[in-house]
Amino acid sequence: MTRQDATRPLPPPAPLAVERGSHRIPAVHWQPADGARGLVLACHGGSGHKTSNAVLMIARACLPLGLAVLAVDGPVHGERRGDGDLAPSTARAAFREAWRAGVARTGMGEDMQAALDAIQRVPGCADLPIGYVGVSMGTAYGIPMLAAEPRIRAAAIGLWSTTYAASEHLAEAARRMRCDVWFTQQWDDEFFDRDGTLALFDTIGSADKRLVAYPGPHRELEGERLSDAIAFVAGRLLER
Image (tube, rainbow, N blue to C red; front, side, top):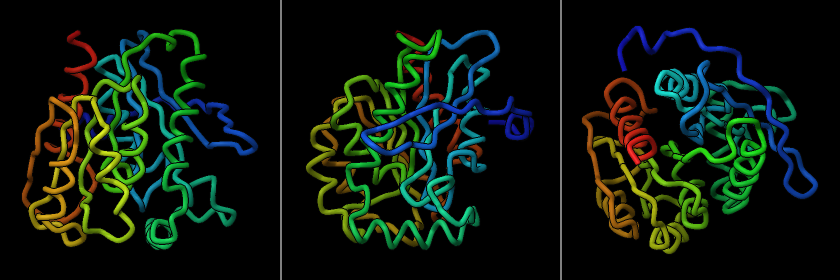
């Protein structure tokens, strides 16, 4: 993604009405001006929310390719917070506490599946090929969903490990994944060790998977890493 692409103005996101059982799931979506050729479900990291900068960068990269983007708030993020606090430090601390307590271990994935059900009722979105982009928290909550969701053809995930606290369930779910996978790691990640990251990648059951390492510490997808992730997912969705 070029610097100009990273600052390209976006249309305002459209709210999406999503419910699962008795609770409302805050969700938004962006649609390409000329109609969508595919759909990307984007999941923010632990310090973000559905319209945080990481999601906006994904939308800026996807819309020119004809890919609609769908995003939902995490379990203790964005509109799901009663105090309205969107500060990254607040979200990060709340997520770490929630993750260790087992909050939304599979429920977040079920919320994302409900959002897919809802977006497919939007005109022009019913039969689109679907991809997924979500690193760090997006991988922790995304893997159980990807293991159970046959609609997703390709996923860009990573920045998580089997050795991180409360992650024991992820290996079993990863073995059931079948979508094409681009898995990224930061070589000097201060939160996820290399051995545990490689172990998580190794358990993924997909026939088409690749591990891509970049220098530096833990960070959101941006620049070259974001361009590579979107190129992988878009290629799988649009070249078939």
